Amino acid sequence: MSILKDLTLGQYLPADSVVHHLDPRTKLGSALALMAVLMFVKSLMGFLPLCVGIVGVIGLSGISYSVVLRNIRAFRWLLLLTFFAHSFLTPGTEITVRDTIIPWITHEGLNQGALFTGRLASIMVIAAILTLTTAPIEVADGLESLLSPFKRIGVPAHELAMMMVIALRFIPTLVDEADRLQKAQMARGADFSGNPFRKAKKLTALLIPLMLSAFRRADDLAVAMDARCYRGGTGRTQYRELAFEPMDGLAALALVSVITACYLLIS
Image 1 (cartoon, rainbow, N blue to C red):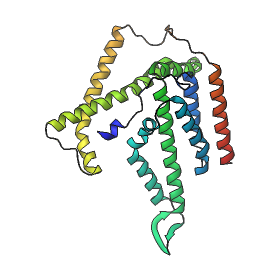
Image 2 (tube, rainbow, N blue to C red):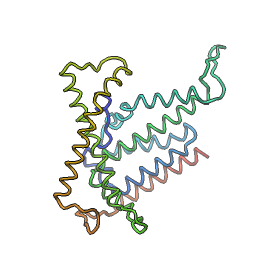
Image 3 (cartoon, rainbow, N blue to C red):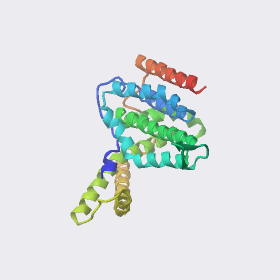
């Protein structure tokens, strides 16, 4: 299943790089800040500082650009649908080619389509960089630390962080399971070839066994956690205490620089 094989969200690739050694709170905060900034970008020029920053981070991480960008290929149909939906449904000035008006497609629609498609693609890349350079346990610790101030108002920080990390960790597991189920059905004569619509229709046959497998794995995980006396975050300590390093300060300055550049291009 080529679409699922391209999905890198939830995978972690260990490496000895500057990005890998950053505090997980720095990476989580930076990712959330960049995603928030993307919501305010109103022109394609506003993506320029973000693209430069993302390219620089990928280079510092030591991970291949093709690995990071595979998420975009996995969601290419969603991106194309987003682009064409805005191109055809946004009112405005129709495009004219050699004195021939092209119906339905407008200049404003093309601009909006490119803008929203760029937002989605950027969010996918940022999420991929975060998960590829941060171990699941570090993501859990970072999320719990960021949510800890809200414990005073009853927010279960540890439980929320644990659920989010388990959900991320299950993504590559379910991808492998879906690939195994597809190969098993192909060995029994199932045909998954053809146009994209026919493939999508055939892939629905995998949903029920995949859901059953996910529920079974979730039940096994719950039993394993209960057998190890897991009772939530109350009274739990951490083996590795999080601490900000000078490199985290430099990363924060770089983030502020990117956000400032985006603001100057937006305004």
